[in-house]
Image (cartoon, rainbow, N blue to C red):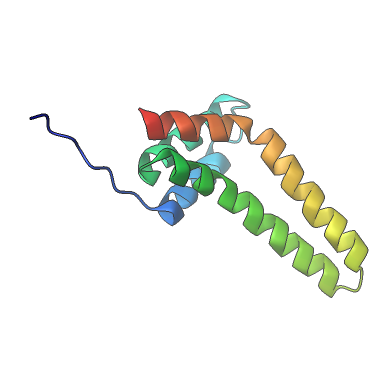
Length: 106
């Protein structure tokens, strides 16, 4: 009977690793987010958790920008800023998502 290793991880811990490493490795255009995603994917424990951990900071930042902009009295501008920031982070976060998947699978 083969021994199967059970990997347990934390989505919040993986997201924290991804954010911290992304900030520290910002000067490496493609490799920095890829490394951050890989480490976060390893910490997440599974492919689904890794993708959620990669998207969590983008969603949180977009919500904060949306709330701050709408509370200043410009709800339309806040909505557009929140959605635009979310899309920019997701589109430019391709290496982060790729690294997260690679880290979770390997």
